[in-house]
Length: 168
View 1 (spheres, rainbow, N blue to C red):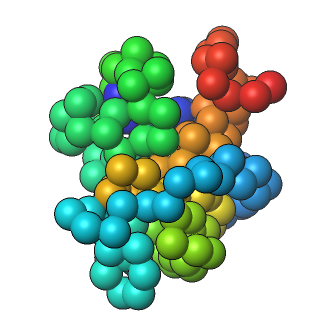
View 2 (view 1 turned 45 degrees about the vertical axis):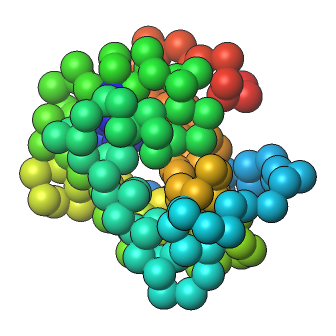
């Protein structure tokens, strides 16, 4: 249920290494939508309001106390990954995990670059990760590329099988 737990399982391993601020390679940009983002009734698409919404939604998505349904709504292609999110929430390491967006750069009205840290028990476990946020249906969401990037990291140290939505 918590994408951070995917990266957090890895972060526990990487936090034992000499460098706790390992940077994952930049995930590929998500596909762009041919339709314009909603102009009314949704979160802001520009300026400080958009940046604040992205940071808030990023924190909610990676918070173990956020209900699965809300996490699904905060992930690009979330409904297709609901079972993966639910399984991730059962990982013990996820219980004390969180993520904090430290920098957001809007790259348009429907996409942003996000630099974030994953924390376990309030301590840096995986630092300076580069991800993407996408604007869909009036909401800034964690990009599929970011979520899949964390799952790929976890798969390198566990028996996790990547879902079909994550390119190999």
